[in-house]
Length: 503
Image 1 (cartoon, rainbow, N blue to C red):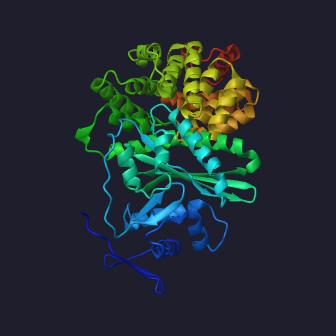
Image 2: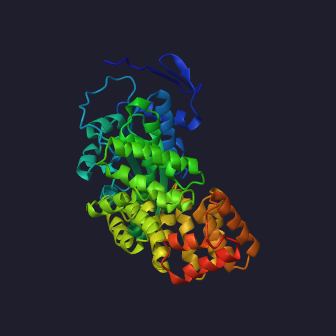
Image 3: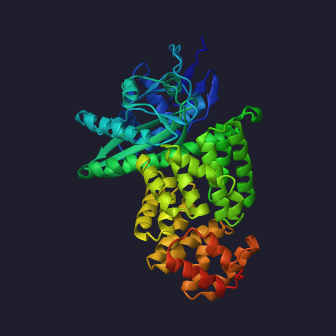
């Protein structure tokens, strides 16, 4: 039996002692704790806490979750129990109920969505709140590479006081998504928070608002945006977790986690070289691991796109891209990496288009899928379709780590649509983020040339030659993934005018 914690609160002096030791709390966190302690033994609704602690002020529910997280960090992850769909209960000082271990954690990021809390003040809205939760679970289950617990298991916790760590153990998941819905007049506010179950550490949060008349559109925006944000957020969290593990305990999955941040839109060839080496090791450890194989040839694609290596260097791994497409995989990221690699490394944009459409059918809310889809459409001169993909990707998750890669695709797309000044202004943002990435420099070279900014265009040409002195006009035309004839002529004319050797 673990030792019982003792909590002493002096409301007059506004002091808190845990096991005899004074602890420091912010004013709001102190008020939350006082209210929970005054009603210890029962569940306190989120609405009651908001009304009491904030004195009736109209505040977002996220303010409360911040204070709860602070209390858990100070008093212990199990100091405050969550009651999904309702509120919280102070759990200090009592013996812990027996918790049965559930299934082992799967080898991919795993998630449970707890029933959202109805803070509208209208119990008859429970059906609406539960429906939004169920719809969100359905959207998350469609993300390949993410293990999401079904709604029936998640709703088994509704109304029960639970520790997030216990939820993680019982369901065999590493992460929990919590949420609530408030109503102010005719406006609904939906707050969501992603938490690491074992530590109750908040990883990500966001909120969405709209009118009751827009409820279906609001629900769609919520599910799309959360699904789009969860994928890269959990990949990043898993990568951090992997780096914290002992280095002798690595396997193919952990190696992929280490390589992933090195492959993000980058101007550092040494990062990509390191990623490629790690992924070769991952494939050697598990030759049947599709994601390791896909990430390996995609790392070569990114390196070639940066003009850090010649496309011929990728020849040994390119057949693996075709093999994975032929395997019938339904993993959206594997399909995406294979499609983009075939389009860029092997002039296969037509075949890649079918694969990327399959990936979008599996996970229509993935920024990675939409970004590559935009590029592939640009290669084929399908600029309107590419524009829709990139606009959607940027709207769904403007803070995604791959935003630079996605935004750069808008360069050739806007050029193809005749909006050259917009294209240059947008790609210049990516240039400042990654000033030595070859694809970005090449887009700007052509854009500046079209605008008559000859000196800027020549400056981009000089930077390209510094990255790779072997660049030639002939080599560019032979290697380019673009199939749109006006672009091929533009590449030829612009590079010749800017001093790129003919070859």
